[in-house]
Length: 122
Image (cartoon, rainbow, N blue to C red; front, side):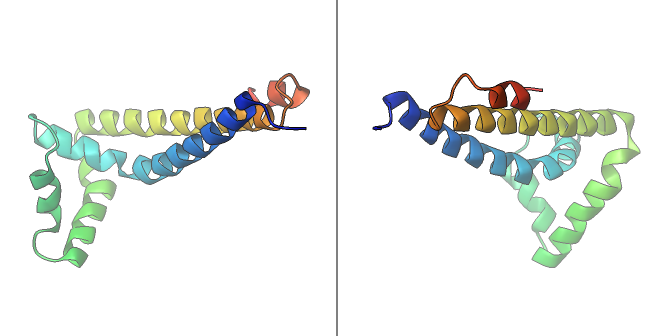
């Protein structure tokens, strides 16, 4: 049977959601660093502020980034709460994306009203 336009569209949307999930997985571990840089620079996160972490050498920049992630963020309550909030939001967003991928995959298979859809929304 020839796939319907809705099935083709849901196939494309599964790919888009998978890409967004990959980006979310890459960004969530950096959320504490974004909170730290944002609290130290009230006008916003600029490329200059981000590249200042890697000024001397790339290896030193990774060490600075790890120091920010593991120690500096958790020193003040403001940055700790913001980092924790951003991390929880990123994890919840990833769960929503996984549910959307499962739901759209069943639509792409041509079974939009199945028991599998009800289970993937739990």
